[in-house]
Every structure is written in C-alpha cells, then in structure tokens.
Image (tube, rainbow, N blue to C red; front, side):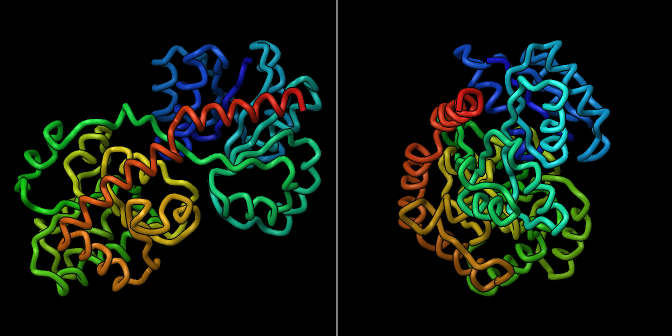
Length: 368
C-alpha cells in the first residue's frame, strides 16, 4: 500500500512525531510504502529523508487551494499513491478536493487537537464529510469534538498515540543530565519538556513550584526543556517569584529526550490543551510516573495512582504543588507509581498496537 503522509508544517512537535512513528513501524514489515509531502520544511523532513522516504514540497496556501489540489493529484499519480494521510484541516481539505482530479485516492485524517471549530468551518466540514473516507482521533474527547465540529461519528476511530518500549528502556546510569547540570544524585528532579507556548501552562507551573517551596523543605530541581515564544517571560516570572537557579533550570530545546527522562524522577505536564501527549507516554515508558493536568486526553492516560500518576486541576497551583509534594516526600508512593506507569504503557500505549490499528483504518478506507 502506497501511503502519502501530507503535512503543512514539518517541524518538531507531537504531530511530526506521530507521522515519523507511523512511517517507521508501518514500513518496517512492508505493509506500507511511505511517501511524504509538506508545505513548510523543518526537522521532520530531515528525519524522513534520512530514512529513505521520498519527499516533495507542495505549496498549500489555504484550505480551498485548488491549485494545490491539482498538484497533489498529479503527485499521487506520479507516485501511484493509494491513500493520503492528513493531519490538519488545511491539507485534509486539499486532499479531499484532489479527489475531483484523481478519484482513485482515499483520504484518512488524524485530528491531533481538541478545539472547537467556528460556524463557517463546521458547515464546510459537514459539506465535505461525504468525501472523508476515515478519521482518527487520538483520544476519546478528540472524537467527541470531531462530531461537534460536524463530522460523522461512523467513520471516526479512536487510536491512542503510542511508543516503542524497547526504545525507552534503560536506567539512571545511562543519563548525563545530572552531571551536565551539576545536580546531585540524591536530589529530586522533575522534568517538563513542553514548548513554551501559551497553551502549555508554564506560568501556572512556575506558580506551582513557588507554592511547593512553601509546602516542603526537601530540595528539588525542575528541569524545563524546550523553546518557544514564552521562554523569556517564563524565565522572568521564575526570577520575579524568587525561584533559584537550583530550583528551576531552563535548558532549551533538546534532541536527547531519553537522556532527560533517565536523569529525572517525575514527569510534569501543565498544559491547558492536550490531545494525547507523546511526551507523557514516552516519559512513562522510560519509567517515570507523571503529574498531569486533567485536560483534553490526559485522563485517557492517567486517572489515578493505579495508572502511574496523578491528575491535577489546571491553573490551580495548590493542586499541582500538592501532587508534586506527594511524590517528593513519599518514596514508596514514587516507587509504586513507577512500576504501574510502565505497566500502563505496556498494556495500552504500545507502538505495534497503534500501527496495527492504523493499518486497519487504511484498509477500511480503501475497501470499505
């Protein structure tokens, strides 16, 4: 099966990780021959080219870009594409318009966000719904939102994002994080690796850390990895609240994410919007329990300690600080949640299960 993965911006966030994961695991046994087309280039282009995937740039100026639709149809003929897998509305609309020029192709759309569409978009969704072959939501609330946005529930499948446990295996001895940052081995280290953007809740996280300093005398370090437009304002807030360089360390964007997980004791997600975060499930696969906000699809990952972590109230520093304190001061609870975290990932978020389920969606799109 020849599958064209179509993405407007080929950067370095969760959607790009999703595409790279599918390309890697669906092509490994020859079920899928992957191709890739994009509008704006980025890190994903480099990674797919390194894997030997044919790559082509395709200008896509708007959702209803018929010139792009014609070019996409021509590209599908050139590469003998059976199915296009899209990831945002712009390219999804263009792929469905391309059917007018190349009726053979089928279109699958994965929704990576839980966001309400405006009235005009909901209407256009309803009008294009009959052209949509299959849709994937990465969490249960994502499916609910797709239906609210005007798509038919009958062709929406929920498939959780997933990870390869072998890729995240190992122990603390493999990590250079603490040596690099001068953090003692016995110090409690928390990690958040979200991009510094408004919906990731870094201001709330910083306020929670300040609250934590009033709840415990045990020393801790919060490692904040990532870049983005709110990096400098977040640094300023930490300084304003009197958090020290030992308590909060900003380390920028890092490619060695496994190294960061292995050097940490607890993963933190402070987001206001999440669908199904790769960072959370990767961290748990690496052996970390997690404290995450009860937003979006986070509750599909963790509902409580039996799943390997705690859910907290978004923008409530007392809730977040209390959860962090529990892990910080109760080694037995931390140890138990580490075991349950890994078991949760093995059972529900294993990459081959995700790949198999996605391939079944492809087959359904092609054959009904």
